[in-house]
Picture 1 (cartoon, rainbow, N blue to C red):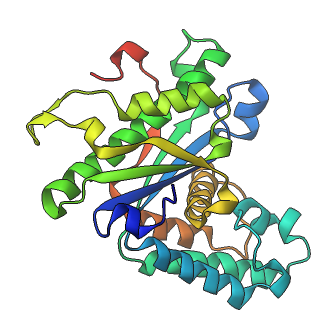
Picture 2: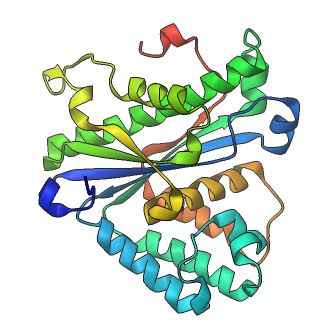
Length: 278
């Protein structure tokens, strides 16, 4: 099935959630020290706006990058450090690309951001009953659960106010470190039943088209946007030394302006799994 074919879905009734991460949910001493935050973000775009977003970003790439880089994936870490696919690209062009990308996001209507930040040092300190391996698996699944709750609330409101009811998750395939387990965790987070008094029915499974689409980020500009969002949030909250040419504070403020509700949640404690749905 072509997920982007409007003849399949019709027009005007569905949302896409593009999901990507920064860092890994690992709790070994080296991982906690080098990557103290694990960030996973959903960039939610109405289906009538996806093509427009893609056209704007592709136009930006052609405007600021050399011709031989037009097809290169927007990978924020590579852009900032000027390595891998961005080796040899002048700093001013790399800055122009990120400035332009966040400029597009700041003006774009029908796009919302939701993000979950796992503070690994605090989780490690406050969840002493788990091994480091257990914490990694639980943190990964719990981050998805919290993100799914945020997206679900968004969809409830949109259903009640605008009649848009369904959503397709498009998730960067690299998120699926433990492939089947992570996929199952996401599906469990999305489909868990429960009576919704606002709608007067069992609601959750009605909201999301399953299975989620796990895709490579180079295939979807929406995933590349989610990568940029997660990277900037991680860098800003870590207080990392700034690459002075890049306006991370400005990018972060744009992200805050696009958050849906309380769309930036910091997790410092992971409840036992039997309490997740209470």
